[in-house]
Amino acid sequence: MFQNIPKVKLGIVAVSRDCFPESLSVNRRKALVEAYKAKYGETDIYECPVCIVESEIHMVQALEDVKKAGCNALVVYLGNFGPEISETLLAKHFDGPKMFVAAAEESGDSLVGGRGDAYCGMLNASYNLKLRNVRAYIPEYPVGTAEECADMIHEFLPVARAAVGLSSLKIISFGPRPLNFLACNAPIKQLYNLGVEIEENSELDLFESFNKHEKDARIPEVVADMEKELGTGNQKPEILPKLAQYELTLLDWVEQHKGYREYVAIAGKCWPAFQTQFGFVPCYVNSRLTGRGIPVSCEVDVYGALSEFIGTCVSEDVVTLLDINNTVPADMYKESIQGKFNYTQKDTFMGFHCGNTCSSKLSSCSMKYQMIMARTLPEEVTQGTLEGDIIPGDITFFRLQSTADAKLRAYVAQGEVLPVATKSFGGIGIFAIPEMGRFYRHVLIEGNYPHHGAVAFGHFGKSLYEVFKLIGVDTAEIGFNQPKGMLYPSENPFA
Image 1: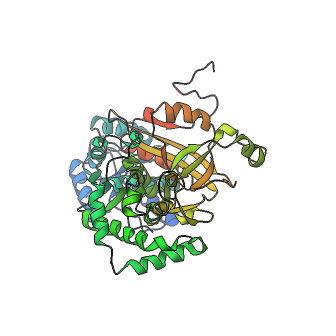
Image 2: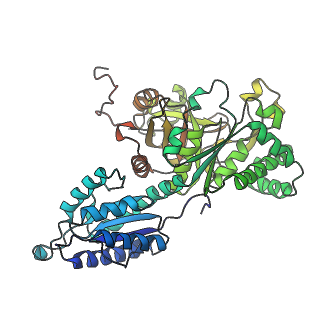
Image 3: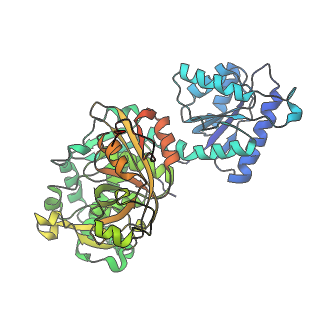
């Protein structure tokens, strides 16, 4: 388990309208908690025993109780119709992500004295949440049995984990974006709106700190760990001491600069002067930190680092950041994909970066030099990339971005990495996303997204979509790979 993402403890508070039997909410809450613990364990849920919330006084009591219990996420459970004022005040004053869920009726034999009408109450709850400008997670169909509501609550966990993480995240950046990389330059105002802090530093400050670590006594230990990780892929052993020195520089910087924030992501510089001054490229170190749950984006891509952190919280796994890079050649498609996988050539592309993908997400890896940079620089100063084909399997490609006018937008697309050799260099894979061609044109290009996309290893589209909604991205600004027959707003219907 990563140390750089939060652990969520859910507080569940049942509410009751005073003209309905309180016992409905009491008994249904108990059944819900029992169902949750039976299926998912007891570690991440707390049942508020203080009271059933019927009034504002009860609301204050319940709020204090879940705070005292250390809950950082809240479940408001409508065991019956519910008190729309008190229940939404509870959500308003709880400092953390919250969800609303409601009880279905149990039996046709209890629809007189035992009818709860939570189906109706959820409508009033949603209306009152909007009146109070409170964002809450409401499942697709938020009314269910104890077992169904338990599943809904469990699906809320990754969403809550990302929201809690963002509320205590600091992004540490070094240097301005490289020349000709305006695509990665975005207004930081939305970071503050999300509750994220950013510390912008000069790469000269980083260089000074790096030099002060030159004879750090910990370097041999880090080198040994790198050698163990690389194994037979350790083709540039002479560069490992400098890479270890740089890794220690970043880790010490994080500890000394994260301040009051609990979680950190880094937006690092890697060119054009980095190689000649530091004497290497930082890709492998970036991959190692990302592998520990501290995402490091390339080319000072602040929103790329932010996206990676969200993906780490949602998936509880290693992520990566890749260029949506190049097409799959027709001969390669015909040889290795056509007839073997249900994708057109336009559904496929290659995701690539120089060498920042963690070794655990590569089929095999080798330490190399950066071929593109070596076209204009001495090869020896471009060493430090981790090359290899990305492991095949399910992926989610996504990004959260601020536009030039400081408006938040995002995209999410699920697909897979195909088990096909790339015949290329860098950290690279052949990606297949249904209807990628249309998605590329009408979301990525039309939405003015940069070429960097975050990659989570697995299908997490549902959770990521809910995260983006919960943090305030307008649903009209969340793009996805729409199926055939579902036109994008900018798509020509006659094409």
